[in-house]
Length: 194
Image 1: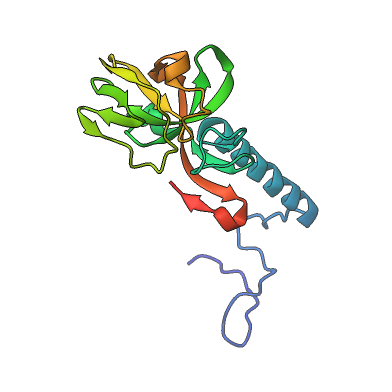
Image 2: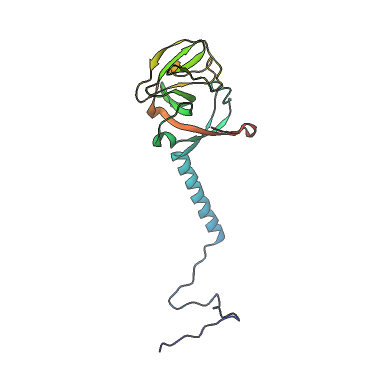
């Protein structure tokens, strides 16, 4: 028969909370200030990783995407979307400016690889059909029909008369698409999901 050590119990028969159980060390408590600092560092590290790899915040500069987006709007950009899948027609995207990749632009993807794109009398045509259901401000510029090559995209601003877009700088390579705009969070009265 093994020797049993006496232990202290309360009136319910439970062990006293300060009593050591044979072979176990008491748990060490981390001071509250150290624990708070550690939690804050972990939280900040996760936010930085999320910003670097998954989500970015962008600020709209200029008027080329009006009436959809306005100068000063703050956007949440999904940086993973185009790494995991293809761009879709109608996406509002952040892209690297093809003539200076250090500059970001926000434009709407309107022509996908293989699409036939043209503009006549201020209307955008994609694959022979009018494709101007974005609330765009029209432009009278004519654009002869062409086919968007593989790995390229045709982008336009919604405010076409003032937009610097594929009509000026050409098609956008898939590798220049940085992310898809998912939401506008500022100003609060204009919050929207895309």
